Structures are given as C-alpha cells and as structure tokens.
Amino acid sequence: MVKSFHIIMVLVLLAALLLGACQAATPSETDCASTDVFCIGLVTGIEGIHDMSTNQAAWEGVQAAQNENVADQVRYIETVDLKDYEQNITSLAENGYDVIVSVGDQFTEATDRMAKTYPNTSFIGVDQNQVATTPNLTGLVFHADQGGFLAGALAAQLTRSGTIAGVFGSEMMPGMSGLKYGYEAGARYINPEIIIISPSPPEAKELTEADARWGASAASDALQNGADVVFGSGDRSGNAALIEGTHLPEAYCIGVGNDQWESLPDAHPCLVTSVVKMVGQGITELIKQTADGKLPAGNYYGSWGYAPYHDFESLIPQTTRDGLSQIADDLRMGSLTTGYDPGK
Image 1 (cartoon, one colour):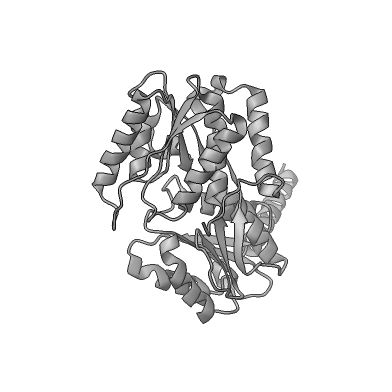
Image 2: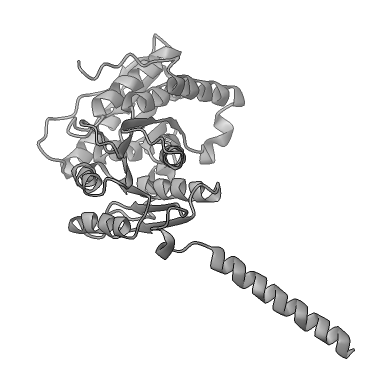
C-alpha cells in the first residue's frame, strides 16, 4: 500500500514537472525580440475588436495563422482615440513584434510613417491603398467592382420581376463607383435584359444624416417602380436602403463589406446575404508569406465571397450556390473580369 502511494506521488511529480516544462516553453511577449519567436500584433480602428466587421475579421485572420503554427505569439491593441494609433503601433514594434497589422483606410499615412520608422518590422495595412511603395509595408485592399459583380450576379437570380435596384452612396466613399459598375455588370452577366434602377446620389462635401434619408427614399422609389431586390452600398445611404427593403414583404436585399446580418439586424426580414471582403483569409495569407520572407510590398488584392444565407438558406438552390462560387473563383483568378476601368 505504501509502495503504491510512493509510485503515485512520483507520477504526480513527474506530471507536474512536464506541465511546467511545457508552460515554460510557451513563448510570451518578452520573447518577441528573439529571432526564434514569430510575433504578430494587430492595432484596431476605433470601432474595436468586436465590431462584427473588418477589425474582428482581421483578428480572426491573425488567430488562424497562430492555429496553423505560423505565429508563436499574437496580441491586439484596441484604438480608443485616433491620436493613440501611432503609439499603439510603437508599443508593438518596441516589443519586437515581427508583423504589425493595422486596420482602417484613415490610418494609411500613419502606418506608412511607422513602417519607415521601423524598417525591420513588417506591416500589413487593411484597406490601406499604397500609392507609393514602402518595402516593408503591404496594403490589403479589395477590388470594389468584384464585390459589386458578385452582388449583381446574385440579385439577377433572386428577382422575379426582372427589375433590381442598387443604392450607392456619395463617391466621396472609396470604391463607390467600382461597386456600382460591378453590380450592373454582374447582373447583366446573368441576364443581359435585366432592368437596373440605380439613381445617382446628391453631391455632398461630407457625409451626413441626409445620406440615410436619401438612401431610404431611393430604395422606396425603386421598389414602387417594380424592383424586388435591393443592393445597399454599405454606408448610411446603403444601410437605409436595406432597411427600406423590409417594408415590402416580397422584396430581397443584399448587403456588402461585412456580414450585415450581424451589423444591421433591422434588415433581417429581407437580407438574403452580404458580399464580404475576405479580410481574415487575406491576413493569414500575408502572414504566411511574411514568415517565408516573401511579404509583397505595395498592394495585395484580397478576394470577395458571400456571407451565410441565414434565414434564406432554403431560397438558394445548391446549383445556384455552386455557380456563384465559381464566379467568385474566376474573378479571383482573373479568368473573369468586370470590365471596370477606374481611370474612366
């Protein structure tokens, strides 16, 4: 009995020692300066890590890299005030993080300054278009026309009236013209005879609540003129248009940018899906390339896809889903183009 007890105690001690060794082997932030430890840090925009949009998707991409054993240590810092953005990046860089992901087009210039300040750190700027090339900085950006094309291809297969609507906000918003062009091109790719109602928004020097009122009015007019599918552009006017679509029981609507089922619950009654930027996927791809010493400087174009169909799962046949997935793949690979020329 005593002998058995001693054996049990020895086994317990061995287990404790092994556990301690495993815990000690887990890298911490203090190890990030080591060349043997690969650390990824993310600095959010002011919407925070749980925005159900770009910040959250970017963090999921970072976590995916860790889960695939590409990254040893990951961490995020939430930006509470715009003036703290560069300090948040500095904190990660000074602690030896190998890759820093920054989120938000409004921080394009700040990220570029930080990349030049820390040339031995790799930077990924989400939605940050790079006009000039900084060797250790990549902008993860998306062709807006491709997202619009996917929305149009779906809208053309949802409509029963043969008329669809697109409500697009001020061209002050980046990518708005490409989104509009792509939507119309995607719909006509499926049905060349389709009728598309897409009124031009009023000119504006800044975005205001008036955009929402215009978006709702534009969607209402389109629905009264036979449209039964509404695509909203993702800004205030687009969101208002989606909500307006709920007022007609037989209408469907499509969101954009992120899964608007999560971010715009008021649109649930008509929201079939959203065309989404595959931010997480793009982040993981770029982190893997960085780990291999091959981070591409300049712009890296991510792909688009569809969010879940939620309450409308039964509405979309598998053959339709397969066809839409093929269109998304063809756009990504370049075997299908939208025809959009941003210079015109």
